[in-house]
Length: 425
Image (tube, rainbow, N blue to C red; front, top):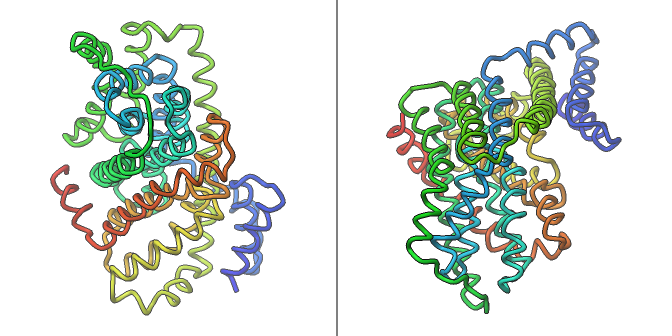
């Protein structure tokens, strides 16, 4: 009964057009009514407690780092570096898109922002070179999945706070799976582009390629500094966000000189607005999570999944299928925030490592960003490439299948996540 009340109230509130955070508070109030109580004071207190979390401080810093990176010319130089070295290869612009997304994901951790930056720079070039636009757009959309997976990842921070899991381990555990997804996209792209009659870019002379490397070295060093600092214990995830902001600011203002001082106010305001939305949503989700727990919803879900608890791999497969289905109807944030408190007790009961589950759960939710009809990355790419959703989906399928194959491999072979994590930590 409580599960039905929670689901119905949440979906009903969202159907009426309420923002996700407000819909979560409505569902929390509905759960309180089913328990025979309604106390707005408790809701307010729990909402404040949800936002009062030190690990959440990393979120505004990484959001601001992404803003500074795009405005300061770092994104453009990452793309220019890749163009100089692989742009002349057949299908090279697709390889540039994947490489640029990997590097930018290791800086900002925002799928929509990274995808928008790469799509704006590369889709016009790919159109002029004769690439199939829906397929090229599909590749860039699929590459956007890497944003929440490769550290630093805002999604990993949110999951760690809600599930009470080590954020540092989550971030490092996403490195190898993220690279696996990137490699799968490379294979899929080279397979589908082999018959296309595309115009390769002229091979740049070595001197020009070296110049692009020198010019882009400061941008390329940024992700290595963040991941290396986390691995060596030089700073915490929150401190890594601060370091990323300072680095992007210094490089953009004093090295590349493309970040004017007058633009800083607008960047701070934009980052503050995004942070307010994200943190309010997290706080509302934690209120719902508290009431979900007191209403024994996890126990009801555990009872449904009880036949699979003794078989961890089968349980993970069932959960991943469930999340894929849910991800076609709900956006990344509500799926992450609703299902995390529901599924974590089952995961712990089955003896599955919470970090391993967190990585696969984030990957699965990230794939939801490119599944219609609500995938936010799909809408971003459609707007930039000026094609319909149906056209984009035709070009996306090979890359979506490649990512689902990687997810299946991670389910079947947990050491693909845990062994690299043990090395990194």
